[in-house]
Length: 272
Picture 1 (cartoon, one colour):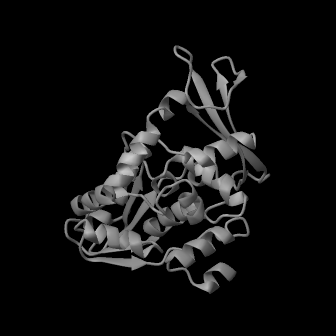
Picture 2: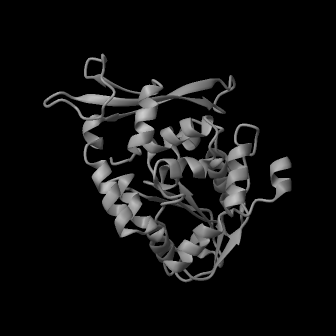
């Protein structure tokens, strides 16, 4: 698992006590990320407050992200190389060495004349924990419902390795801390020296070519860039269908930033 933190941001988080290192026994050691020879250690990042929507109590949890120090040892050099080479898809190599994607076939998809499709980027905090800092969990649930209830049925493509728009869970945790300090979701990525969106949708396009068999597809997304990336990857006959869900006070600023960045989200969508 390769993810990247800008060295200056890392130093700041260490100084603030939000990035530390522990050994195999759970004892705190120095804040660097290079493990002593022969000793396993973990880098721990947090706490990040997560207002949760799972269950009935809806507590605000404190999230800590942890990664083995050895996983970070070569990342900075790799990030520099990828940045020099350019291209959003190259940065996806920082998020995962092997991404396993999924396709869910729902309803009458196989006999449909125009399947309804959702290409969903994995989001541990939203999809699994029920974090309300983003709208990912509600979008995922709403997509499944919409596809299941649509007479045409359709496909849900779940993309692994897309955490945090492609930067990985470790770096995403850092962006949350930067957002809590006043930056928006895109500014936080840039502070880490990472692209606004480094996701690679070429695998999704290939899967939809296979399952879609040339049929017109209706894509559930508010992100014109996602549609453009799929089209540039050779997917044809795709029409975008608006997909807004899960708007609340916890993610309103995040959704406003997405709207300003180019997502097709209307003001009334955020005020409903």
